[in-house]
Image (cartoon, rainbow, N blue to C red; front, side, top):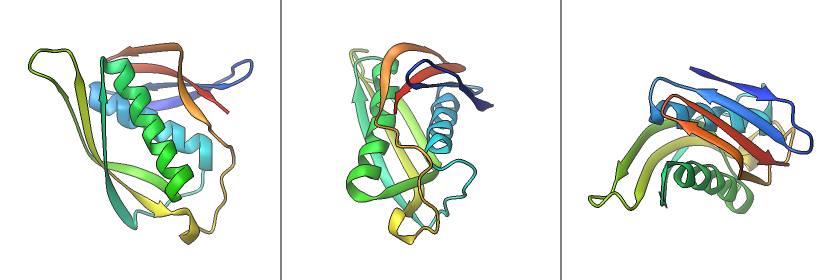
Length: 139
């Protein structure tokens, strides 16, 4: 389990891996927040619910990452970890739903500043298997 930051021409590319699809989503999340805050530790002072739907697992992953970025940009919430994560397919298999409890802190309560502005997770060169993901971020 883990993640790796890779060189990319104009953006930032991240490779993450886990033992299952949920753990892979967790590792991509850790990697994204590492891009934003580097080695700085974000305390787990608060927790909040994140829910997203997607037409497939790729759409679900990008939606999950971008929902976290929206919470960061709009509400000033920085994620330190994922407490719970559930991924379920609809009965007909036409849609996926992710429900997660993430923990972290409001940026206003932090002594650190972001190292990098991540604008969005993108579908560009996206690769996803249950145990590995390659995601490109627009910075």
